[in-house]
Amino acid sequence: MTEKILKVRLAELVVGDIVAKDIYGITGGILVKKNSEVNNSIMQKLYKCYNGYIFVYRKVNKGNNINRININQIILKEVEDIIDTTAKKFLKENKDIDQIKKIISEVLNNDSIIKLLITIRPLGENVFNHSINVALYSLCVGKEMFMPYNRLKVLGTAAILHDIGMHRVSKDIIYKAQPLNDEEKKILQMHPRYSFEILQQKNGINLEISSIVLQHHERSDGTGYPNGLRNDKIHQMSKIISICDIFDALTSDRPYRQRFEKNESIEYLLSAGENTYSSEIVQGLANSISIYPFGKWVMLSTGEIGIIVNQEEENILNYRPIVMIYIGSNGNELEKPLIIDLSLRINDDISIEKMI
Image (cartoon, rainbow, N blue to C red; front, side, top):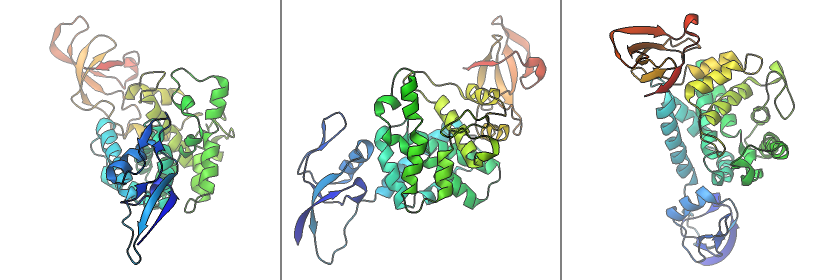
């Protein structure tokens, strides 16, 4: 048996390794002390908040296989938990989440992709969870658009990796509590190029996936970045990821604002117009989201209170459901319930104020 010191990445740690040097976090505190023996608990801790090299002592028995910690299983478990949480909160119950999980599991059966995800895990929910959510929503849209399985895998891969370049952006910018200034915006807007450069250097990531990632902030009207592409010059999958990226960002809390409701986010995407966001893609997303579940009590902008009784599955305005009113605007219970179909033009000036 021999013992030697190695400089390894997180993905290369082995059960039983002895930490040779203290491991420090980004705030300067010690994450793992020297001489600690690597176990699953330490692995989980490092996976969530560390992305540097680790110096370890490793005992090598000639002829014995290394008992390597299965990083893939740790990541897959966390990804599955994120999907389950988001699906329960946002998606309609009839969505085939198992197939989406299968696609994502197959995507993650790639050491290059696992290593890339490890680089953004320390950036927290705004980047890591966001990447998984965008993949989930994108695959829902892809299924709504009847994409074949092999194309869904391409879409899922690009969606998971769309923000991989964010680890080159300062956390001070990513988590700034106020709106970014012009210089900070320019820095942040470099991340699609960073992602492209990183992916081009990785085995198993083809040019199409890298290009989809590069274009995910382009807009059909030419106002996007980094290249100001228009319309059919933008990959269809980039357009899908773009819309799902915005939806997840809008429906998530940010340091400088609170999250928007699901219906408000869909309305925003629609109001931008066809020249900015494809209505077909927005419809695919809207048809996947449980914006107002059946049986949910809501208050209208008129002050009336009622219950969601129906909404058309294929209607792009499925965030404008049919509401059965039980309490009038004066706060009194109605003798006979009143039905209001919010999708009708005559009711355009009425909106759902909140769910209760």
